[in-house]
Length: 183
Image 1 (cartoon, rainbow, N blue to C red):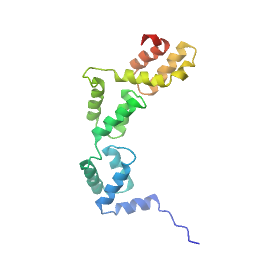
Image 2 (cartoon, rainbow, N blue to C red):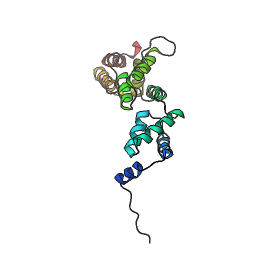
Image 3 (cartoon, rainbow, N blue to C red):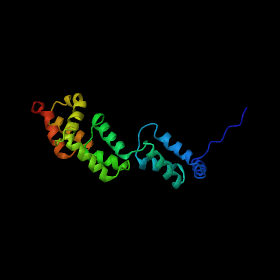
Image 4 (spheres, rainbow, N blue to C red):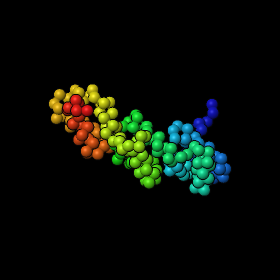
């Protein structure tokens, strides 16, 4: 019977990683982190420095990942916004907050959200209105179970507010739940 192997503690793992001199090891760790989904530069930097790798090696690995096209904050933010619009509709306020948490530059966020408002045809659109309507469509069955129109409107408003839509959008779209023919 073999003796039980002692597991490496987090501190020991960080210490081992701090001793790493090979930039390829840090590059491989960054690439593994990107396997699951695309990430922002700040997320990768946080992950690698938090794992214990030296900042100089982390910077070199991030530079190489940028060169290889595996890291691109603009592409990441565009994909994040498109994914949210498609799968989990959110208001602009929450999108902005999520992208800030991901480490995306505020100027880039403003630019992308402005592009979202302008749309593909170059005309001003109301992406939050469309996203709010999609969110309520997804929750249509549960809202339909509420018999009282006032309560139904209040629940719709609360759902929209929780998902980051501004009060004007919440008010307008929640009113449509009570009077759906106004669409």
